[in-house]
Image (cartoon, rainbow, N blue to C red; front, side):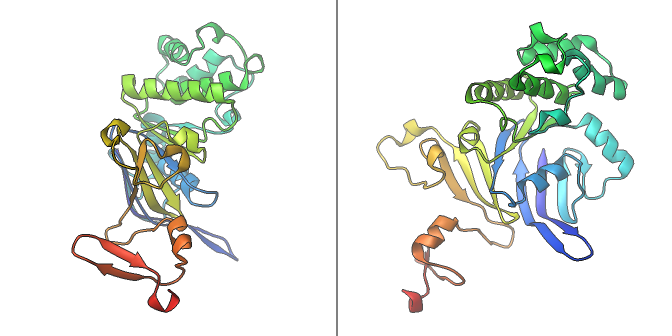
Amino acid sequence: MISCEELVKIYKTDEIEVVALKGLNISVANGEMMAIIGNSGSGKSTLLNILGGLDRPSAGQVQVGEWNLLKITDEELVQYKRKTVGFIWQNNARNLVPYLTALENVEMPMMLSGQYDRAYAKQLLEWVGLKERMGNKLQQLSGGEQQRVAIAISLSNKPTLLLADEPTGSVDTRTSDMIMDIFRKLNRELGVTIVIVTHDMELASKVDRVVAIRDGMTSTEFIKRNPNLDEAGSEESSGLHSMQDVHEEYVVLDRAGRLQIPKAYLEALKISSKASMEFDGEKIIIRPPKSLS
């Protein structure tokens, strides 16, 4: 569904140039539900904006389904945003029109694209648990209910890709769990590909695959496995603390063979600018330079 190779995004002004993405590589399978994590400034929101058609890449390759987002025209970009991708903002006010009811909010994108379908709009609100709240205006809905309306809106034009930017950032734990249950249901029953950007490790642990971005590049992946298969052995992964029992960490290599070693490992070995590396026939060993040992 998504393929990014050596993706670069540069923001320029008269006085400064910021490289937000520095040759990022990532792929997402059709029908997958995964998460992207990273600290503030890591490039994860920039990636999401490019995938959502809200920003243009500077260089590299980025393919979403049939669309080449590096070469897409402005007219094609409109069709891409209408037909392929749905977007859920952290601030749900960006999804919602306050003077409309929940049902009218879901119907609006349908009318704008010429695909009005009231029965489907009602079905979407039922899927997100708002069957009894369709006629309510936004001020009559809680924050969690508004976010669920936003999810229904993002699906109104039947996209094949759903992008969610911190979708549970402004709701409580109970509502967060409910939203994740909705995502799982939509992923399973509709087959929609879902990419969630978050800094919430607990939320990230609820998907099968997590990609970590650091300094504009993919650094590690965490892939869920069955812990019952490793009852006798110890967990080799030293990844995110809340994900240790169910996710295994992998370092991501790019086409040139470069990899990003987790910062915690480098700090533990006091490795800064250089490292010693050797191959013993079975594994690659990385150590501090001998002069620093």
